[in-house]
Image (cartoon, rainbow, N blue to C red; front, side, top):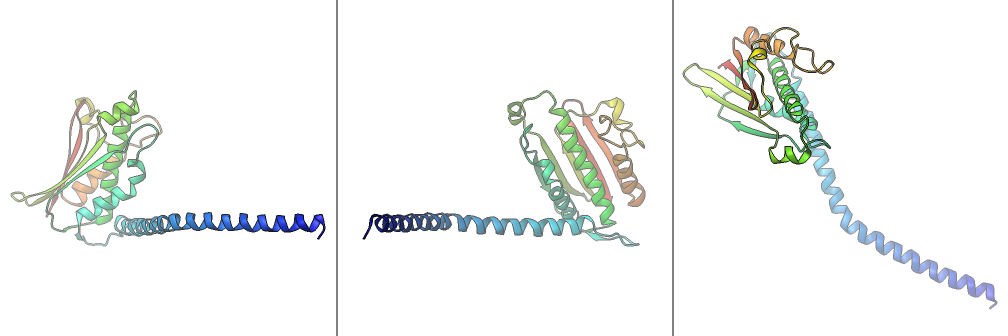
Length: 231
């Protein structure tokens, strides 16, 4: 056996050992990684199903007549659609959503229009919180977390479903509070608001559903919109 053959045998022997080590490493990695990957796929699939269901609820086509609709389903689908805006980012922690859901019967309404009101009000609440964070550090905001509170209840005396959507942002001054439902009125910076959201929301609630929408707000405390819908 010449020197070249000895080198070849040694090289082959070491290559086999290296390959065996790689396989062992990969096997250990797979043992640890596969369960996590499967769980991740399960969560991803569940998320897709939830989004798909929420989109169906949210974009539900309105019929000529009003139809029974679960208000809580509408609120939950709206929150899921806006989840990307509620999540933490570099500027602030996650916006906390507190749901105080009471017992509500299904109400006769135009679901697509009611969902449009919900997305307008919750989007406005997120915008208000982001504006109130101006000049604050991440730590400051974490110490006094941004929060949106959604409350539902029945006014038995008036036979109405009550939906309250509030935030703990900077609030609205008395001067603007009387104008916010006006056509094209907005307190947002140029390019950030059309002034149509609240005007359309009031039209949907009051003209299309015979309900009422009001705004309660105090500077430095926050803003709450209260919707009343006939049962």
